[in-house]
Image (cartoon, helix red, strand yellow):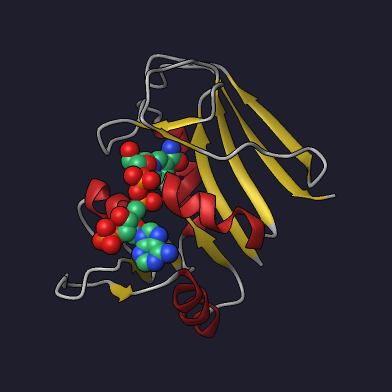
Length: 161
Ligand SMILES: NC(=O)c1ccc[n+]([C@@H]2O[C@H](COP(=O)([O-])OP(=O)(O)OC[C@H]3O[C@@H](n4cnc5c(N)ncnc54)[C@H](OP(=O)(O)O)[C@@H]3O)[C@@H](O)[C@H]2O)c1
């Protein structure tokens, strides 16, 4: 199973200036619970935005750079290679962004784990449109904002129609 994990606003916005757009510790916990113990695939810019390898997960980072090395991550030159390596490690693999990588992988994903944040924020990076002819929502859980989580949001699961 190949699962995309993303948090997006109501305009499908996901990031600006190579950072996230919100502070939602409940969502970070959800992300950790979903992905821990499994390989995670990400673009080079998302890796740099996180700034370190995510613990307890094989971090597979996609880049075209030939002379770029970092401790604790596996660097690959294509999406195909990333998926091939990840599948060798585990049946359950996760694609964790960013926008550029989501655009290129939404067609190969089996499932989308979306955090829909109830906000419209300025952004420079977006998730592709979720086509209702292709994807159906199979689960949705609402979380109200609180002192630590600055917006209302939904955890949504989409599976193929
Ligand atoms: N809200 C969320 O859930 C979420 C999740 C993740 C990221 N984000 C946000 O998204 C933004 C980053 O996304 P982004 O679209 O700018 O970048 P990105 O998708 O993280 O990374 C793009 C980079 O990946 C490499 N790449 C992409 N396609 C490739 C291919 N086919 N073959 C080889 N290498 C390839 C290239 O690296 P090189 O330039 O090194 O060749 C490219 O510059 C940040 O703002 C981040 O905070 C949000």
